[in-house]
Image (cartoon, rainbow, N blue to C red):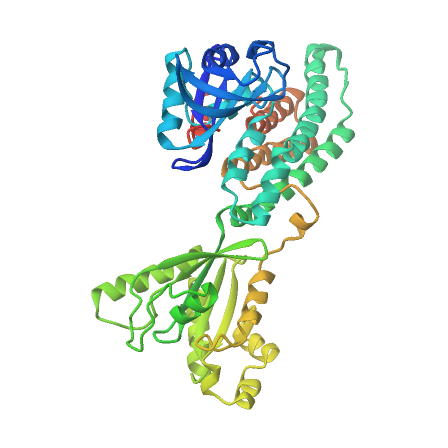
Length: 470
């Protein structure tokens, strides 16, 4: 990054709209804008105006007026990037946007790279790296829970925890390394019992953050829910009923769904990613067999598996299907909901007698049993409640830090490995230089998250995924 450059970009989404915002940041942002801006009130030049002010006027190419605009002025260091920033709000015609952008470039600015404004904010110390990444998460948030988690991280909730941990570790490692300078005199500056207590405290915090990733990842990307079952059990009908649209083809013909169909739905601030799969049965059809293989693969990947059965199926068939699905589930964290569909074709007494939730759940080992009619949308609200139960939103409701970023998750795991080695070393009484090395490793991985330790390659990989203009 050459921070002496002045950069510009369109910050609003591409296309035609009522207005568009063009952002300019850098040491020449104000002087370049001043060349093009004709204020309606000519009392002061733009360079003489106070910071955090808004000005009405026009953008001109020489004597030719391009558009009427509103210009916002921010001065360093009190701006998003820490640079001087000018934001031009113009009419949203694509021609006008491009014309103003070209004028800025002709007068000394250059096009910003993806995420370059936020990267400058990081490099100028306006935010740390985890906060910068939260900016992208906030922009991409598709649900209330994703917004809340990203906003908390952007405001420094995650960073503050890590900074506090690093500060405590730095104090102890400096004392241990001081001991090494006096090794011949056998002096002990760092209280080993206090250090063990600190290591245990940090281990608890790291474990809690690591465990939160399963929730955070689901919130960020949507909770994958695989809808599986035999052919003609009503999987596609259930998907359409949940989404309230004809998303999947419904037919009496067996084996209609041969590929995986996915769609998302927001339920009370949580995004669920529903996956309609091919019906499970024995077949000699090569294409259908490939679809069934995909079904088993999706079962392994899903957080929640919804097994849909026909209410007219015999108990033996249902139990065999449950057993088959559970054999393909690969994690104790996965939830299994058995849906008994087509209850409209069976008497209510039969449904109540056969599928009373507690006894049938114990018999099958499912987490929940939901009798319903997908065709008539009967009892769908029961299934929705069961889906919401699979998500432990306690951490979000209590405003706790939730890890959503795979890079942070990996660094936290590496840091915890170092903490565990540190504790083992203290308990076995190994020399201080080995303990200091383990603590330095923990500090390194915690610093990777906040950007206190970073490389150009890491920064490049992070910011290349941002949109241009942010």
